[in-house]
Amino acid sequence: MDHLLNADLHSHSLVSDGTLEPEALAQRAVANGVGLWALTDHDEIGGSERALQAARAAGLPCLTGVEISVTFIGVTVHIVGLGFDHRDSVLAEGLHRTRSGRERRAREMGDELARVGIPGAFEGAMKFVDNPELISRTHFARYIVEAGHCKDTYEVFRKYLADGKPGYVPHQWATLRDAVGWITGAGGVAVIAHPGRYKLSTNEEFALFSEFKALGGQAVEVVTGAHGQADVVKYAEFCREFDLMASRGSDFHSPEESHCDLGRLPDLPGHVTPVWTALESRVQ
Image 1 (cartoon, rainbow, N blue to C red):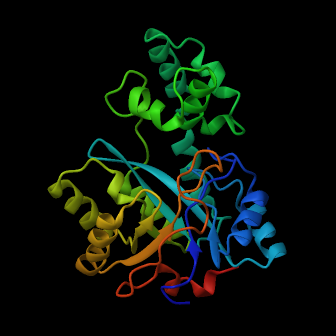
Image 2 (cartoon, rainbow, N blue to C red; image 1 turned 90 degrees about the vertical axis):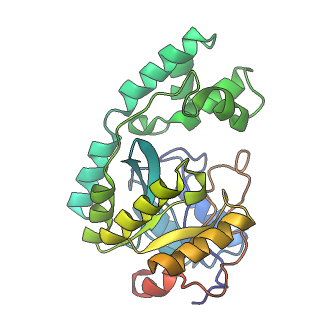
Image 3 (cartoon, rainbow, N blue to C red; image 1 turned 180 degrees about the horizontal axis):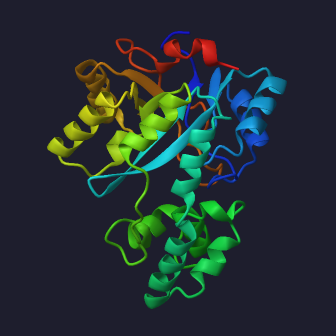
């Protein structure tokens, strides 16, 4: 498996904040020519067995996956795990602890949104939730669009749900040490997700990559739906600087909402080492 493989190792199902069932995602991946797929729901591996079974039935090579929410120097960053044992009890318990507190946060978000003229947002968001433990800002965004306050979910995040906006409520997630430890302890590879999205200074970003590497992290998403070409060049260079492998994933959530469809990404640059070269024995 080389750097030209159409791997999509970052996607979400209805089990977290996507809109498709794991089985439908597997079928979409096959239809779009994906050669290696991973379902990486937020802080949840409840869809893993369904994803693996659907991929097997479709002849689609698949890795287990998850995206863990982490608080790092007061900023939320995401760490993707790939190729781990999804039955690992330490990982499962860690993810359960990370999910706890989402409902409290969501109710606070509803209160904040009511103060700026959007009543009933918590109840409205819950209509879009398949797993109540995983209510998220995306569910609020879908309700706010449905209620006619914004034209799309991107406008909702810009106006209401980003850090510093009226509906944003911070949450203390897992630590970087915990997230990397859970993934590697279950036999997987830890990956920094879409680093171009984080509002980190140069020094803070260096600290993130340095600590991640020291804790046993092995890869970074270089090509992803949130990255432009300048980001691809930058984080390919980070692979060299920090001796990390490169990952590739669309961060697909929904046919209606996602800018980048499953498997419709540029190739990895030729001079990086694809993360899947370390995961061949874990492909199912």
